[in-house]
Length: 126
Image (cartoon, rainbow, N blue to C red; front, side):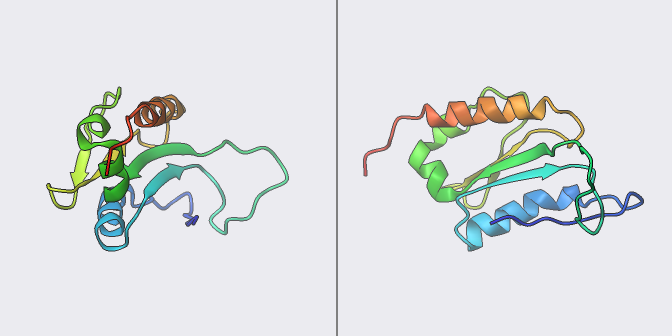
């Protein structure tokens, strides 16, 4: 599912609400994963007939089941310089990985390193 919101250039997107949204989706709606990104665009979400910059990742959230499947110890030790945030109950948390503020394209590199790290996890026996 994709949710896209448009903001005018005079408006500040509510980036501080992403963590709370991620926690609600993870703990109450069985979120698997969520990638949030930001890019300058038109408020009405139409696309002009010229090149525009691509979105830049803000954060990645790994739901509780995905975190459990990967293994909490492995999932909470990615090669990132940012602080990982545990969401929900400590016994079976979701993990929220901040990647940047939406202005630095190097966040794509951080996201790639994170996803490669998460893919290297050994499958857990059930």
